[in-house]
Image (cartoon, rainbow, N blue to C red; front, side):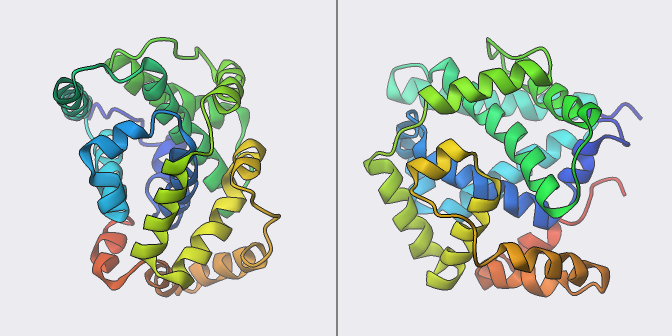
Amino acid sequence: MNYYVNEDSIVRQIWGKADTILLIFAGAAAEFALNKAVDWLYFTGRLPSDPLGRLFSTVSYAREIIFSTTPRANMAIDKMRGIHTSVEKARGTHIPDAAYRDVLFMLIHYSISAYEVLERRMTDEEKEDVVEVFCRVGRRMQIKGLPANYDEWVMLYHHHISNNLVHSSFTDDLFKQYRKHLGWMRYIILIESQKLVVSERVKNLLNFKSPGLIRPLIKFYRMSRKIKADHILKFLLLPPLYKHRIRMLDIQPGQ
C-alpha cells in the first residue's frame, strides 16, 4: 500500500496518540493567538466562536493526510487549499504566503516539542522526517520559501517567531475565548501545558512564568498510560461534549 507517510515514520507515532495531539494543539493555540495574520482566522468567525471545534477540524485534516494513501492524502490537501482559496475570494485579497508557512512551521515545532515532552528526545533523523512530511504538504499547497531540511527549518522558524508574532487585541480576545469554552480549571491546565512546549519568544510575548503546576505531573501521566488510566485524565482536560472525539484521536486508521 502506497501510504503518504511511511508506516514506520515517527510522524505516525506523534499523530497517533490523543495526548500528543492535545499538547500540539495547546502550543499552537498560543502561537496562533500571536500571529500577525490571525485576523484571517477571525474573518470567518470560526476560531473565536468555536476554538475547540476548530481544533478537531484541523486534526481531522492532518490525520487524514498522515494516515492515508498518497492519492487520498493529496485529495485532502487540495481540498484544504480550495477552502483557503474560497476565503481569499470572499475577502478579496490573498492570504500572505508567510501565513501558510507559519502554520506549517507550527505543526513541525509542536510535533517535535510535544513528543519530546511526553515521550523522549527525538533523533536528528526523526526530526528530518517531521520536516520532510510537512514540507511535502506545503509544496502540494504551492507554498513558497519552504526549508530543504531540519537545520534550515530551525533558522527559518527562528526568523518567523522573531518577526511574525505580536501581542495584539486578537491575542487577548482569543485567550478570553479559550477560557470561556474551557472553564477556569481547564483553562489553567491549557496555560500550564503551553508553557511546556512554546518557544522562549512566545513565553515572553504572553508573559508566561516558568512551568510550575504541570511539569511534576508529566511523570505521573506517563505512569498512568502504563496502567491504561490515561483516558481518565484526557477526559478531564476537555469538556464532556468532546469525549467521543478525544477517544477517536487514539484510533489510527488502517490499524
